[in-house]
Length: 102
Image (cartoon, rainbow, N blue to C red; front, side, top):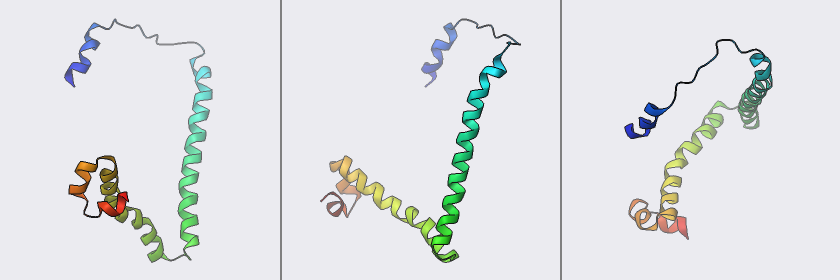
C-alpha cells in the first residue's frame, strides 16, 4: 500500500488560485443536486420506518422483530452464498449447503 503513494512524489506542484471569479455560481447546480439527493434519502428512510411501524399495527414488538429479522438471516445467507460461489469452501463451512444450492 505504501508503494501506491510513490507516484505522488513526482507530481508537479499545482498552483491553486485563492479567488476564482464565478466558482460559486458554477457550483450551485451541484449543490442543488446534493441537497435533493439528501432530502430524498432522508425522506425515504423516515417514511419507510413510519410505514413499517404502522403496517405492523403500531406494535413495538413486531416492529423490533421486523428490524431484527434481516440480521438474524444474514449469517446463513452469507454461508449459503459462499457455498454457491465457492463450492469447495462452502461445503466445509455450511452444513446446510446442500439445501442452499439445490
